[in-house]
Image 1 (cartoon, rainbow, N blue to C red):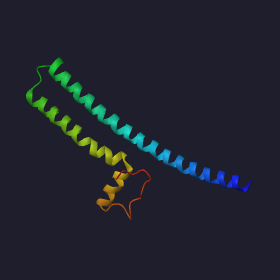
Image 2 (image 1 turned 90 degrees about the vertical axis):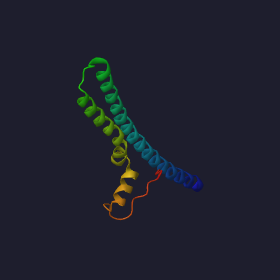
Image 3 (image 1 turned 60 degrees about the vertical axis):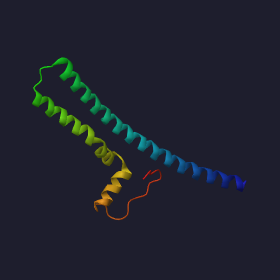
Image 4 (image 1 turned 180 degrees about the vertical axis):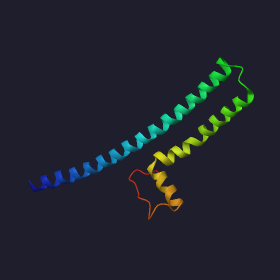
Length: 114
């Protein structure tokens, strides 16, 4: 009977750590979904701009076209690194440590890929 209680205790401890790992994995997946939604929104905005300029209104001034073209391409190309810093905890902690804005050592995470 004592062995049964010991086994139940160790199984509960093991499943408790697995549930924490699953919770952390779920949080990381949710953050990646946010990043992908924002990037896809930027791609759709870029696509709608091209549809408008080359399909609907073909008489757009060259300066206006290049202004919006360059602005959209700059935003689209610069957004993913900033999104990683905002939404990814391990990347954010490493950047803060690199800039000496984080006090102490960075926290180690269970599922960190860096």
